Amino acid sequence: MNLIRKKPWWQSKTVIVNLLTAGIALGTTLQGQAIITEYPRATAVIVAAISGLNVALRFITYLPIGG
Image (cartoon, rainbow, N blue to C red):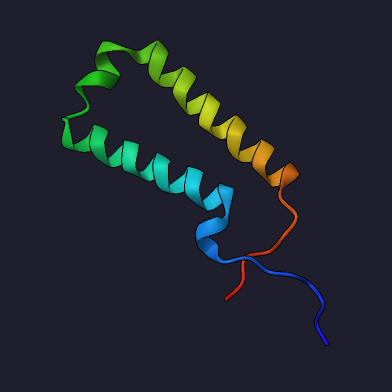
């Protein structure tokens, strides 16, 4: 018998952060990426912050995603 608890995918903080990241990337692409060329330093900070958040979530997450 498998006693490992699993949570639905929509309750995963990692999945939520990555979906938000994908939404921001899509919005930036649809905008023509002008914001990246206008604010390259801010863009780099945002990318670094998202990467750091994903790494931090991996350290604090312990339940696997299941059905």
